[in-house]
Amino acid sequence: YKPLILIVDDIPKNLQVLGGILNKEEVKIAAATRGEQALNMAKEINPDLILLDIMMPGMDGFETCRRLKKSADTEEIPIIFLTAKTETGDIVRGFAEGAVDYVTKPFNSAELLARVHTHLELKRSRDMLKELVSRLTESLEQIKTLSGLIPICANCKKIRDDQGFWQQVEEYLEMHSDAPIKHGRCP
Image 1 (cartoon, one colour):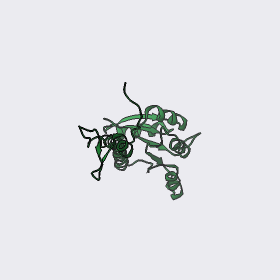
Image 2 (cartoon, helix red, strand yellow; image 1 turned 60 degrees about the vertical axis):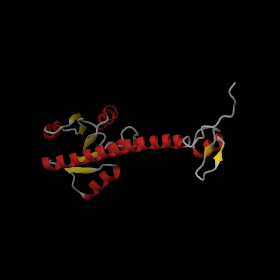
Image 3 (tube, rainbow, N blue to C red; image 1 turned 90 degrees about the horizontal axis):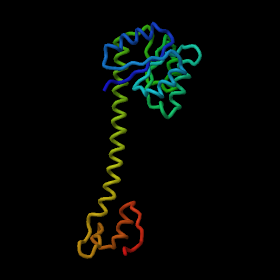
Image 4 (cartoon, rainbow, N blue to C red; image 1 turned 30 degrees about the vertical axis):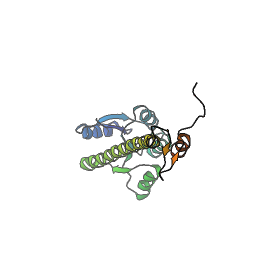
């Protein structure tokens, strides 16, 4: 599996430099030159990471980030700002808009790669954790349903509860599972 990185910068030379740095890595690259284009591409290709320039004509990086974070389709994608701005206020604003990190221009290849690798690994770990929680929740639901069916008497069809008392099947199931009990008789 190769992670997909979306690079958003209005200057073609910056796209080339970033592409050159990242091409040496085990990643796939997509590029956009405007904020609106980045929004559409992010929804379509679902990248693992976005490298986003702050200063772009039209919709700047701050607004692009804000919109990405407001959309259910793209809110989970980590965003690293690319910026020539080094003032603390701009950096803090970037974090407030939802960015996870920033890299200053001109790019230091080693620093850029270290930050990219860190955030790709964090995203991969979050995705794995989310999948494990989902599978665990599903398994717990199955266990809850099945555990209520285990202590059944083969002769009288009553169920022994946790205190050792025997109950009718319907009573026990209603108490120990979310299974709905329909009262009826077979023909």
